[in-house]
Length: 313
Ligand SMILES: CC(C)(COP(=O)(O)OP(=O)(O)OC[C@H]1O[C@@H](n2cnc3c(N)ncnc32)[C@H](O)[C@@H]1OP(=O)(O)O)[C@@H](O)C(=O)NCCC(=O)NCCS
Image (cartoon, rainbow, N blue to C red; front, top):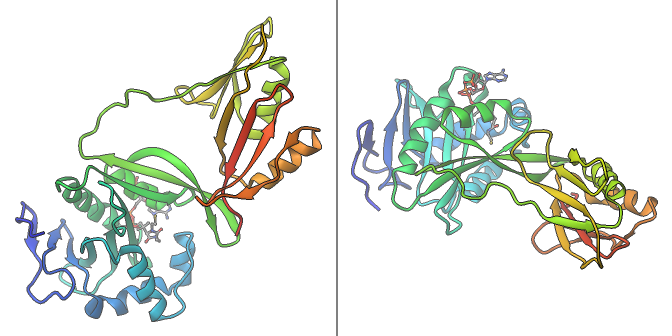
């Protein structure tokens, strides 16, 4: 696709091997040039190979140039050429890269950004991300952009916020040697308030206090409200108002069993062990084809509560 230049954009110089049709974008201090393997690999590999850089981004460093090529190809190889390297004018060396992930056939596209360590903290990636996100959201085939960021990576979260992305959700993440969480930062081309912002199933249970304590202890749910007569309790995912949760109601007639899945950001095996130790019935944990590990707790009244978490390494 050939895009007409917009204010602040120029076409890539002729001869740029990979991205003849993509644009050079500019910011106050930077040129964002379409990535060219031959020209940019050495500089990008030096960045990827820096162990301190990798530690700061909660990733692992490249051990060879071939690994850096493989990384760029795996992440951005099929993204329609939407990979830009950052150059701090007037220097033409790549000091970082910002790119859309390979196409997964959706109009919501993932974005990632990497900057060489010696340039951190000067607002450069925030400057680049703002222009790239604005540019992407102006394209007809993109309705939103997402960045999946390790929840500890405050710099990257700052970049996302500075580019107008807001917290949209969380996913478990298996990192070498640890289980962590990614936060999903997102911005829509046309922002709108969601029609539905929480789902609140109701479980009929024989004893509200007992089930509330079980869910609180096992899942870290927060008790928002419990009636004095023990006929009702509301549990929520966080201590904050406005989120999802589950209501418990004291059963007044025969209970029809429900099935509910809880997505958790911790390993499910210790939860299973705790459930079994508490004398509850549960199916043993198993991996699913969609990269989660799950087990199902069967409450005495027949409700099936499935816990879905990350797969251990
Ligand atoms: C994440 C990364 C691209 C940030 O680039 P950067 O140019 O240093 O970012 P900026 O200077 O624009 O700063 C972004 C935010 O980090 C904050 N920040 C800067 N230095 C910081 C520090 N030492 N500690 C914590 N936060 C810091 C800034 O204050 C800013 O937030 P604010 O504008 O709300 O104040 C860079 O650190 C990097 O390449 N890290 C390794 C790879 C990585 O993590 N990529 C993201 C994968 S999701």
